[in-house]
Length: 254
Image (cartoon, rainbow, N blue to C red):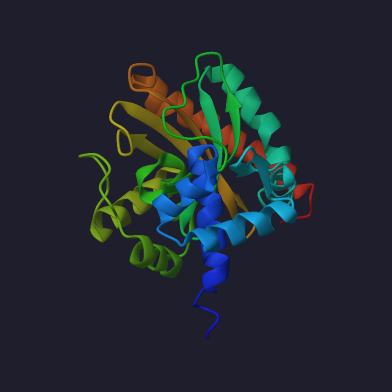
């Protein structure tokens, strides 16, 4: 077995964990029906995961334990540096009243790693840890514009350019034009490319030769419009991205 082929036992274990997470808890019989696995196999997995402390068992309903909190906290602080980024996100959220995201790339997808929530903020599609196709969101497009061409080719080959709305980028030619435009402007716009009626502005966080993510401000089209959407928000997003760069520099990441 090569390193590129996942171990079946590990893959099944995570499939069970992810289903339990998505359903907000599940019994053995529910897991058997949903995953089409033998009852004895499911029982062995949930019993082992419970003994290891990764599942709780409340009257036969299994759910994720708080052991995952430690891993999630580690990933957010030591991998994504979200704890260092979020104060700047909160300031921008206070100024705009909207939701502000710190989005990082992992495995060719955009991961929502940190956020600031403004007084008028809406969250129609994401929470901390949500993954999105990079080509459909402003933060993802800003990241794609900052990545080398060969890495972008790898991402598109692996994940494709699926259509989410009639405005979504769906061809390599469109993506190249968008990346060129973003690099020229220094920021990315999303105008209903992931969700109709939803807009966002994003600026990449680049420090030295490293790309650490993107800062995105998002909100409904009726609020993010005109000069505010096309000029003011890009300046604010770029300013926050610069603030984050300075903060990351203090960690010796340059």
